[in-house]
Image 1 (cartoon, helix red, strand yellow):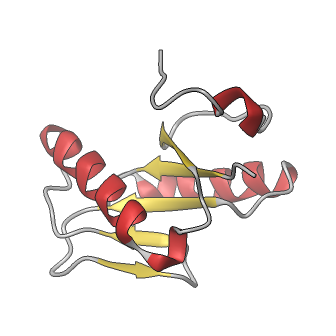
Image 2 (cartoon, rainbow, N blue to C red; image 1 turned 90 degrees about the horizontal axis):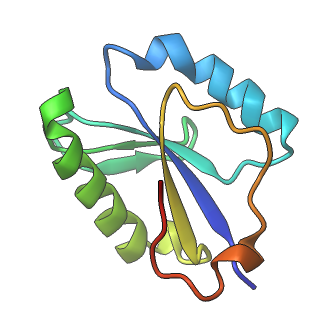
Length: 113
């Protein structure tokens, strides 16, 4: 069975503005299958309590490609996320109205708008 992890990419200057909204939004959708991602850490690690992946990388806008690549690498290689078959990268100001049906992704390796 396919399982989707929703990944909210943020930064230290924006996380306090959006974190509570995202938690409330995802709780209302009855899922805990999401994480936050922040850069500018001294080391890369996942804080399970905060559902936050801290990356040793640039936390500014120009560091976004590095942050996305390191996030996907960590998620694919980590035992913590081994049950997920698909990852959806979202910005911190995105509003999720409904969860995607994992059957949509059965024959896709990548999709986006």
